[in-house]
Length: 280
Image 1 (cartoon, rainbow, N blue to C red):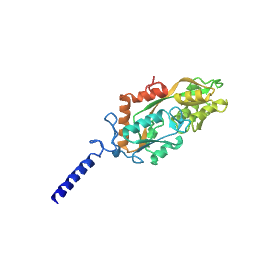
Image 2 (cartoon, rainbow, N blue to C red):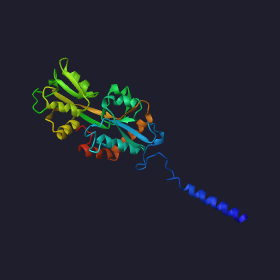
Image 3 (cartoon, rainbow, N blue to C red):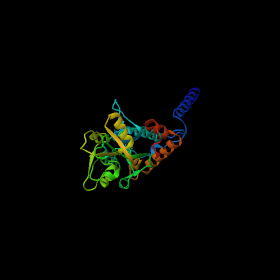
Image 4 (spheres, helix red, strand yellow):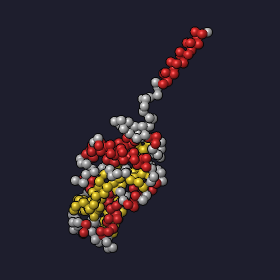
């Protein structure tokens, strides 16, 4: 009887030790992503879906974000977003959304952030909180290669018809330049606007990002050229819902680390062969 009891106690102790050894890496908090010993505690981050970082983009701004032949979202923004997700200890999930309603979707809680080249403006800062800039975009003018309107600089836009992407910073800028006799037409994508340049007379010029425009002209074989100096440079950030400070801090920390360890530059050169935070 005594011998059986001793044996039972021994078995119980052995089983307890085995259980203690099955708890994973000791000292690592569940939900914490260790990237070179760093990372955010995902359990403290307020996200739409537990364990996921859902980021929105239009999917219509090649090479920043677009769909490939397999209908998979790829591009500079997607790579940046996925790297941030990894450093947050969350699964990155891209959500394709029309640009015109993308801010409304964020504030409605449909996703956690927008990583799609959104310019930081005072008006938008009233609605959302922005991260540090993760991208600089140069606004330029594109015209039909024949340029029958004779446009050489922004001073030539008075009375002209300008095409821009809907809900973009280009719209307000264009409205000031065309004056009361001019017109600004909005399009769902930059590509749609640039395609209008094929038929002279519909629009005189398109104002868009240099990278997007050059890619569209090259791959779409459009009869368009960029003219003049950059009209302005937009600082683009990553907006989150107002008050979600923990998530915003974690995103900023991830961006800082990406810049410091060279990951950001690697992604930039992959898509543009330059540092997308440099004005040169």
